[in-house]
Image (cartoon, rainbow, N blue to C red; front, side, top):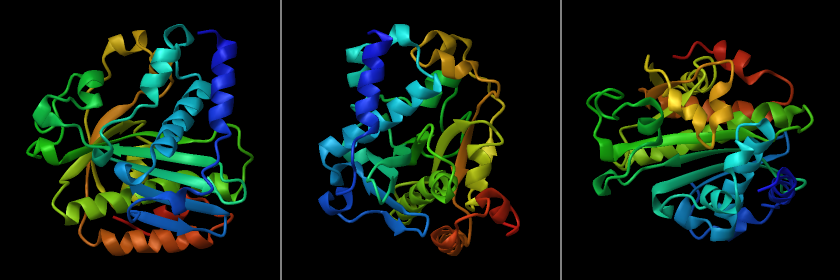
Length: 277
């Protein structure tokens, strides 16, 4: 697929309006909150979200990856794009999306999914790092109660503002609330992810989670795949496992209250001063 065609497809995906999403859900959201920054955050299970919105969320994420230069244009065609926006089995996934209430456009997104390990599905991290969830990573965790968080993005090129500052934190807070509910229902013991050690792992720590980093390095062959350019970034990502901490429920409520009123403060600096954990 030519770069021109990809640019046109991603431009269309970036302009999709989610303004009516909260009224289209077919089940209760895991998280729904607004802020004085103009945000609306919606976190919901996949099968409670109409298909067109789910595909648009995946397309938004793919668009940001393309604009960040994380995708190899020589390996992205219409079939690959269709694969990117397909997603997993809806009842095994949660989408956490942050919207600009004025425009209805997505500004941040993160995804939580539980592979069907009973049918032989692997965690993405198991392919990218040559690890096994439940032994090498998350030793002792029951595989069918481990989820995987991934695809965190913020809209590329949005003007710096309170919304731009808060948006990734809103998305992660929504995911955290979904994790909390899944654990209370006995459907989750923890989740795995990967990232720059100073990035998403630290974010989850500031949200109250217990984070255990692995020393495993990415597979060298990753650079030859569709996401090859992403693996050539300066910071080397690491896999990690995340579990909930005692008293975290109240901490998350306090984080939500702060985000709801925050316009100018650095979220990372503010939460770092709270002394959690």
